[in-house]
Length: 474
Ligand code: GDP
Image (cartoon, rainbow, N blue to C red):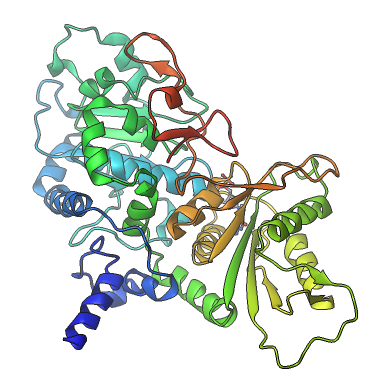
């Protein structure tokens, strides 16, 4: 039965092989059920177990989310919540923003995984600059932390994870645990030594009703280090480097406003090309290398890996019978120079392959801004457009690039950091994983009370191409 077969295929594609449920109202979030039309079908299928975990999570979120009885009970008590009365069937993980959008998104995905593993409900504290970016991911509920949250503004009086670690000794009673706890996993905070990856810490955290997380790191590899989570994680992700790819596509649907920008741009510039190449150029220190060096480096990388053709400087006549193919180049950068120079280069010259190269740069914000909603919409739409490309060249140590390649299920070519006018050799290296890199992973071995390189303990962890002390799942 061909008809029903093709209908099943469409519904499989549309629901991303079962990651998504079909019960949402389409008009409230067009991207949710239409993104599949803009991206090649992912060769990576989510496991049945992951899908069942997601359905269980949705059930939990529905029963414990904002405005449910359990939510109101815990949250309205706030500070008055007695330390003795912490028994509750619903527990929460409150995500708070730190750093740029890429950092925020990688921690959001890590937080979601942590919530799934610990049966917590993920609630996000979005300010105005995040509010318009995403659709609601969970059916029949909301993931937005209500403004009435007792600690929306002032978190001064909440106990912290570090103070809890200090004050807790082995025989202290669980009943003395606080109802709300700040869990700061930012890299500047405790960096390599926060013990979060130790089973003992998880035993303590498990019984705290509300954790308020602040992080700027993709701490997923830490979750894989925790013995009590490892088995569950292996079942959820038989392919280890698909964590972000699956959870990101499950969680992150551009809002209708963002989707309209993405869709229009894609249809106007990217849809008709035979191939789409994304270049993400993040320069952390503009004084280190001139723009032209970075351009030369990108060209060297793109030529070496046949992502873009060389220029034809000879006046040879090309045979008119040859059908012209085209490549669209999407440049994402804060600076207009990159898009402009590449555009000029390919406009003024033919290419050796006779391919037509068209270069587009959606925006150039010149500098990173925080708490600006339009700035974040631009960043999010560019991350998403990059994720729709067929191949990516990205910048080292940039979470902006990580989100793009992980969502897209791509292994990017990562540029090497350039100094002065020298083009690094090689100019770029292929990532071995689709996963984001965890820049500041722990170094503490919980079992022996010493330091360790976790790549020696876990075969599925490697150091990252762009951050040698970082960790990534492979
Ligand atoms: P990272 O600093 O590269 O790890 O990425 P983040 O996303 O965390 O922070 C960089 C921020 O700078 C982004 O969120 C944007 O606000 C801005 N930004 C950096 N590169 C670009 C770009 O190519 N396009 C746009 N629109 N914004 C960018």
